[in-house]
Image (tube, rainbow over all chains, first blue to last red):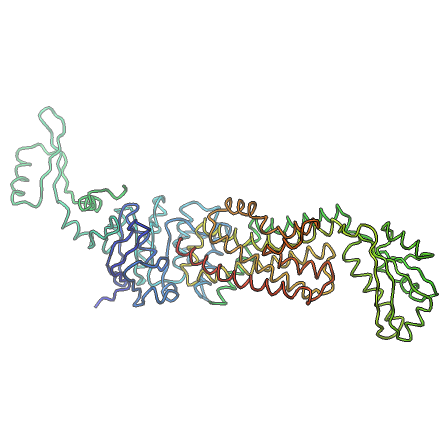
Length: 288
Length: 352
């Protein structure tokens, strides 16, 4: 039986009249990566704040590692790591000092900050003041800070937002390494490719509600349309696009006819992206 | 509440706090004001207290007084000369030693000394000279002798020197600027840079963060209060009690700082509040500066109960009985503010 490390039960939160989180329930198994997707204002950050004990839900409850967060806040927080969306490092301290401070607050006695900084690609810059770091370096340090306590659950809020491809890839590798170590990862991101690549399951959040939650492949099967896209040479030599639906009884005949009757220039299969599915379910894009 | 975490946070405040502009400002500004004031009024390098004596007999006390390094002693022919010298400020205090003074002293009789005091002499001088005379008399008698000094103030009696009127202002600024502004700017900066969010996501509680910042503020605040009193040579004779009062005042300043830090959004607003609300803090010292204003008005301000005991102990040579009621009121204010700090901290957590 798989043990759930995160259990959210009918969570509700509202800021005055604005409902930010509306009776959402889900669970995340040990060692699983859950991608939490949704446009700005969907309620993702509020959900993370509730899960990590920063906000007390107006309704429902959160169980992390078998403990009710509301009743065991200190114990729960000693077992989790959080990487925030906005950079919130001590800028006048060095990377080493930042990590050392947080390690001591977690009560960790033996801690190799140099090794952790090397792991996130900051070797050689350990003693530089953070204010002199680039955005990518700061973000990697944020991830490193969330790992100082070797947390059982890692909450990552848009960890690669606005980063260069190299920094993003470095962070993705760390996420996968952490999963290998056995950590459960709650990942919010705008990057659909990233969510698709990293997540075992994804949850779509819209207007405070979870509108879909499943493995990416299953969502694609359920909501996506498989198609074959071809470019053919028309009568006057101009390229024309054709699309053949792969899930109809007519498909074999359509494909046969394509090659028999048309001059095919290029052909490729196309499956729905998570973005397509999100739009299909909610009627709005993820970046809206 | 975890003491180890508080000490870790306190270490952070001590190591990295001085990089904060407010930390430097909280030390530099009051000290600069003090130095300017003491230089302007000449009290920083002020002369020794001047004692005038008319000896109607042939007292050894005159010789003993003249041998003292800490007091300048001048002898006068008669009472009218002494009175004139005191009135003009040539001496801070003039005493008349009657005939057979030494005999009376050695027989342990009650000694009555007639004294003139210059109305504009510094408060510290008014503490130093009678204490010195009493010591000399005891030395002369070789035993404890009851001494009565019957004093008459000459010159402008109500004219407290400006150098002295400014001391409560300087002390209050030293104690409250550091104590109030350091924790408040530190919390606001942590809110704005969102590092507070990062701290409270660890097992650290907001209470532990507030206590660490508070301790830092109290230490700075007491240090500044002591430094300003020392620079003004206004430490009185009850030093320990005075430090205790400064400590209680520092707690009040820090509590207000924590409340402001929790409730105010940014540094600009904090400075606006400091400037506009400063009258509530500095009201009592402005009233002290102008003795023509009814002094009871000062009691309407909470800071009165922090500064009045300092004035009483440091400038007037008072003791516990002179300050007890106000100190208890100050303790009451400190306790009340603890609850307000707790409410503000809870509100801060909800809003963040």
